[in-house]
Image 1 (tube, rainbow, N blue to C red):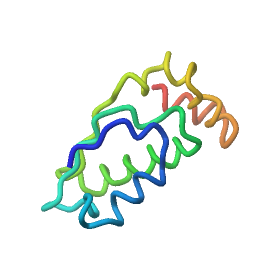
Image 2 (tube, one colour):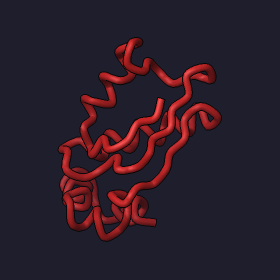
Image 3 (cartoon, one colour):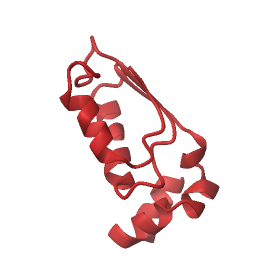
Length: 99
């Protein structure tokens, strides 16, 4: 499955994983490409990107992550991801994401 433009909509990501007819869970036989723009605009960008990155760590040959323009330093400051991280965590976590 090729997934793009989630924009922090964690419920949409969960729906993809929960619905076998849509995408189902990642596995060696069910590969995913996350084609960027995973954060900003939605209220659960942190949860969305952490879930995707965890899947990538767990299944590196089945889950592939491409960075979109919304993962750039400029966009995360402009479209809300920075504010979400600072509201939920702190500047140290923000720096880890921007690195």
